Amino acid sequence: MRWKQFFTPVQSMNSEEAREFMSGKTLDEFTLLDVRQPGEYEKQHIPGSKLIPVGELDKRLDELDPHKPVLIY
Image 1 (cartoon, rainbow, N blue to C red):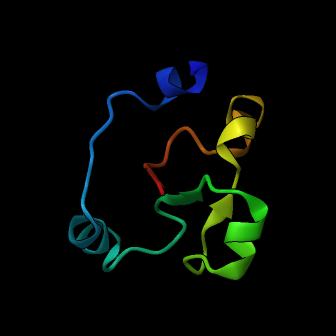
Image 2 (cartoon, rainbow, N blue to C red):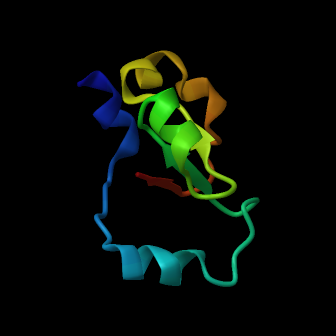
Image 3 (cartoon, one colour):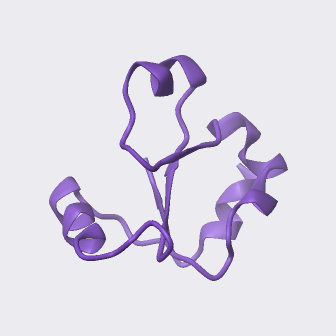
């Protein structure tokens, strides 16, 4: 998948590490990106997350701020 090249270096985190990273930050300081399908997002998502399905990611990278960390789930 070509889009992976835009997210390097990549660091993996577990859910506790992600919570810790987000703690004390506003959504202006990072992007929380949901890459699931719209139906999954509608059923349940993390408040403040942005939906870009993984299949559309390479065409929609311009919607992400390159100066902010991106947490993807």
